[in-house]
Length: 194
Image (cartoon, rainbow, N blue to C red):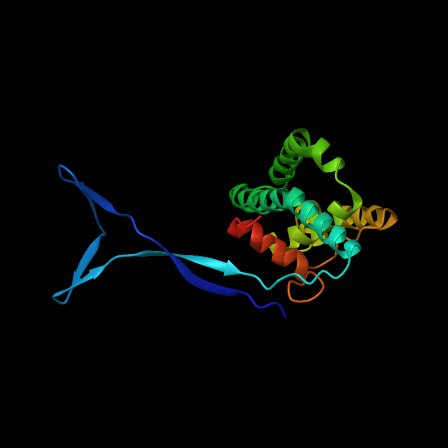
């Protein structure tokens, strides 16, 4: 199991600089608590990851390719999670099923116009990673999302087509098991390490 240690090691002081004629003095912000003067320090968390064990050149190339693919599709997964939450709020306000279907068709058309070409240009591996990351962001498989938003028959058709091309829309996400490397890469992206 991957162990992630959060260490508070860097102290960032927002300092107030006071100037006299010849010298500059740094006065850190202070707070008086119970008669004691304490220095106020902002501590930023740092995420430390265990080193990735790469034994061969082939493993190094494979890991670098995984990093590239995750970095490419992660923004789409984040966007999918945000759009899903946005659409659920709007759908809750629409009283009729016909109105909901019309809204979803317009939303689908808008997303296809905006991102259709980019999504179609993804590689096979990037598509598989995207399916996993959508599960990570939404808590539901892609199949379940389609079933909820478009209906069971449409979800069945999409799953059948996906299976023909080697995908499985019911794929889950296991951050402590098979998807541990992807999870580590995502955490490093979120921490700004890569």
